[in-house]
Image 1 (cartoon, rainbow, N blue to C red):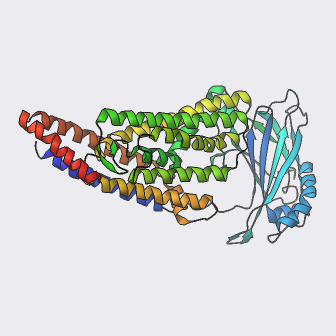
Image 2 (image 1 turned 90 degrees about the vertical axis):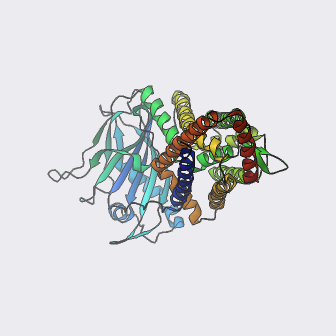
Image 3 (image 1 turned 180 degrees about the vertical axis):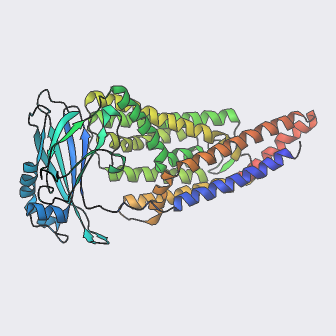
Length: 469
């Protein structure tokens, strides 16, 4: 029995080394490759209560051939500006949504842009991207309508248009990118009649429950895949069980005090970002994303330095709440992109926030045993500083990237959010071994005599003080 804690200590040290290695590997992992462009048009629809916003992605070569508008792979943004009016007129003639009874919708075109040229096996490839808002008439149904669209296909008979629902809050589809879109149909020329028939959009009836639950899932995924938000909280909790003496971490507090600090810090971070999320969502605040993202990177860097050498010992909760305001503003960008009604926004805010808090609580709960035990093991200072240094490196990479200096460290750190299953394995394994070590050590100390029990805390306290220096 006396050898069991030692073997567990070895196992825990091995797991710590594995965790650091896995974390480094995740941060250094290459981001996934971009999809190869395909020679067809894409029509992405975001369904709202009274309107549908659309994003048209048109291969430039086919569009130019069908419309007669002079655009090619070498066209500049300045040349595009002079052609925007004629592009809008062409698309207005070929985008005609109606009710199922034939009532015309109104169509308003927004931003028009050209993508960067990509070199493919068949030559350069560019896309024309056009934003449009399709508004239903009074009594119209945005879930059931006819989409008349024949841009490009009316001239290029081999061309096809893939129509997908990118966002539909009422049905629980709240993704903001093409990768999460659900295809609902294909528009092409009927080779028998040589005509292009309208595509009937017939979406299932939605509900507030579907939208709210989808936002709960989105919030949970956002905190899980948002490496920067998670790192900030964990690095701030890392020194929670330590005592600061003359601007150095020196010794440890008891478990009850450490739990209190962790609870207050987590709660303050929750209150901070929840408040900012609500104010920015309902106040319609127009805040540039780049300064907010740079602020978040700076907050992580400050937290990493604090884990090495105390900067605001005893005031972690205040700092977590203050920096949490910036993290809440970043969360609000997700809601702002969805253009929800007031009722949907209120329900989304509740669901999204609950998802964030639930995932945050789960991750802190899993990390808690390791946080408490880590400071009581030999070499704890070296492990703590190594984790803080790794976090500081990622934060510095993010900060430079968000100030306009692209770098591989930021890209690698961003890609770490795609390896969530590995993170859970490490956290669960560390938590189990930490609990086992604590239980076995407690039983072993109870089996000793009174004199031995008095000697153990003193020796343990000396070890903790030396290793924390």
